[in-house]
Image (cartoon, rainbow, N blue to C red; front, side, top):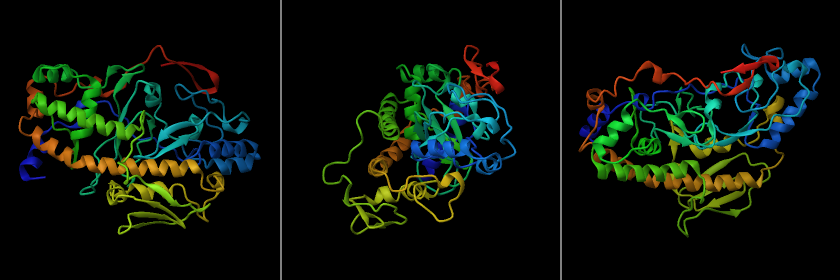
Length: 402
């Protein structure tokens, strides 16, 4: 970006002020309750509950927050047990699909007794009407998107280990009470001359947000045409992040295919730029655009990290060693789709840069939002909403009213 572009971004409002309620990433405390496939989780649970008491304690990998005697309430919307794990002998709670860091959909056992910090306030608002924005955490000059969107419950983990934040679009179940600074939607509607809804603000944030040393900032515009273009662009990005409905595809001739079958237990991933080929052991996928291979988040190559989380190592032990004995076909399909998504997102990046420059021509900056009474955000907007009609089971089967 030019010096003027940098100055415009620096004057833009913080995402933390636009979507003020945020939650810290989940902290599992142990790796085995999460896996790329649900069947492994059920097998791990079975091995855990069938183990003798001393062995069960070893398998759990106790922490300061969780042990065999810990008693906690259910996660909202889930039906796991609430008694101590020392006496647990029931079936595995049905695994749920989650977003593990950016662009990696995995499975999680939704049992509060296994998760050190599960962030129940997130589970309470996670439903079919919810969308989440995830800030992967700031790393200077690391490139990659400033935000990731998902309809799944995200764990919010950063590939580089930097703390990020999770921001639900709505503060209550059912898509009610937008998590938006009070007065912001009305101000945007007034300045732009068209109704601005929460989903459109989220789309704009996906298209325009930029990471800075002071936090994620979102340049806003008072130009209706620029706004409309940015919202359309953001919906394109959102569709690629969510991967719902019609599956993303590259044009014919550029679509990646398996040219040589992947081995049963691949351990190595290499990229050939000249051939645009991804070598997975003796397997080969091509064409793979260089932009997909070079796609980084927080300085970490997304494809390499995705692959590492699905490979076998000799030092894997405990319940995490319970995993597929051979590479599942579903993983190959997921990999092909991920390559496609990353390539298409890379194509959108130049248009996102153009959008930021266009927004700077008619900015609606933090100072203007202050004059409109939108900023500063009241402290109540940064706290989760109470959900008094949401029944949950507390520790040991007691009734809890939140």
